[in-house]
Image 1 (spheres, rainbow, N blue to C red):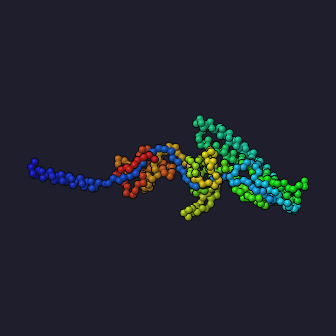
Image 2: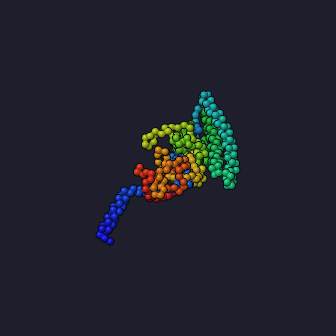
Image 3: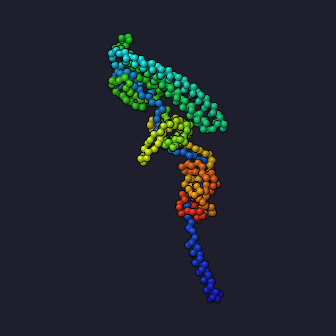
Length: 405
């Protein structure tokens, strides 16, 4: 090789090296991005609120007449049975009743008798409703096993049967309370005499439990004089709990009776199933922890999980409830962090051959962590998560991780 040829070859090699260095320097850098794959799967739209448990029916037992209360031995939490004597009162001796007072007591007696009659009618109606609900549940159970009825229909029938059972128990308890009201009115009328009709001292009056349940509060404990109507004990049935949740009014309009819900972080293992029973029609203003005024309304729910799963729950216990407003079994979805607003509407960056491609999409259901894609993507497409402002159409990208929703 001649010196001239060698010199030309060196110049060519040097120029090629310079061009290669310029190409590397001017080449667009590759951005490292987090990615996920669009996939088919179930999608649930829900929101979560804090709430508390409460006993559906509470009973405050009061002194039927003025007198000397004997010491109450029951403690808070003790179990009681319907008809059990919870307290005893020795009626105070009083003078004869004047005509006006006697007339008032007789009116109270008639009112208590009317209340008893109405309670018995409600008991009969509740009994019929319970029989109907149980028949419907018995009809749907084999149909659901055969695939002719959905699990949701069976859950609703089970919920209606449980609600009817609770209504019957409440109606029967009202009967017993009304009966005690009659006894109290009669006792006050009798107390208006200086002595009992047979000349003996007035008998000791018993305050009885209207339901099977537990003692929730003791207003009186030691032996002491009491006035007629003075509260003595509060009892309730802890197996008849409901949930009370204060929901934003904007969320409440998405709810309806019989909607499914889940009880989260209630203190026990797993989640409990619940169902919306009533959405109160009147809202109220509440100031949040951040000082923001919010319009909320109360939503009442029944726990549909077996009692054995939540028997440790008590009255006024804290719970978190997830309300399920919409569900789809199989939809194409991507993480919500992949979407952003563009001039055309919603869009994502789809990765194609190492480059980010601006892709307009149409969305459907929107959950907290995932969004349904109705048009614009296919299952298996890879999208960029949390795209920043430096990313643009055609940019070179490299995935730092890829996974389905």
